[in-house]
Length: 50
Image (cartoon, rainbow, N blue to C red; front, side, top):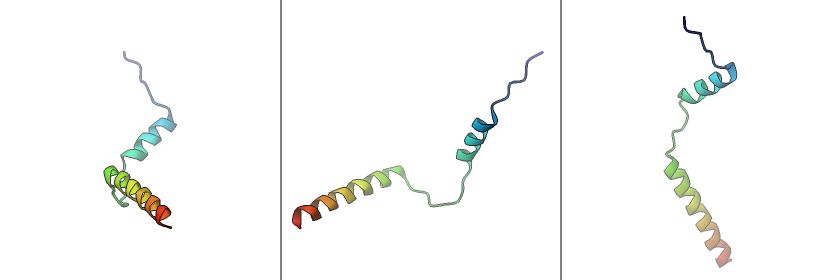
């Protein structure tokens, strides 16, 4: 007879949290990185000009 193995409740809740779709804005990680780099470049250019 096999023993029943159960996961701790805290780790089970974390996995379930990340599996759900909340319906919020869905952003591609590449766009976040690109926009962050573009924002840093704009700030450097503005700092250099003024």
